[in-house]
Structures are given as C-alpha cells and as structure tokens.
Image 1 (tube, rainbow, N blue to C red):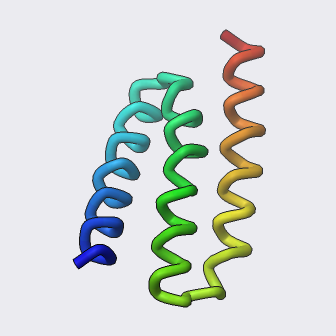
Image 2: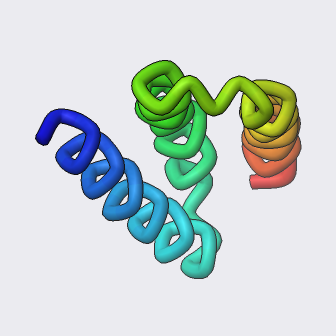
Length: 73
C-alpha cells in the first residue's frame, strides 16, 4: 500500500514538473530536485539500487539547469 502511494505521488509530481518545464517555469527544476527524494524513497522500498546513479545525475542536471535558467532570466 505504501509503495503504491509513493509511486503514484512520484508519478503525479513528475508530470507536474514536466508541465512546468514545458511552460519554461524554472520552479519546475526546484520541484524536480524535491521530487528526487520521493524517487529515492521508492528505490529504498523496492530495493532497486541500480536506479541510484540515475537519480544522482538527475539531481546534478536539475541543479545545473536551475542555475542556468536563473542566470538567463
């Protein structure tokens, strides 16, 4: 039950992130960074350790992109 709730919430937040970024709203990057905590929680619950490098790189990309978008805007 908990895993289902976490994965559903993560999916919804990911869709909101994509919507915001499609609107060129830099808050999408901040939400993306926050959303990674939900992804890590999902990884922990499923013991899908192979996704950790992906999550780390998504955080790096999101932080870099937020900084660039903040500088440009």
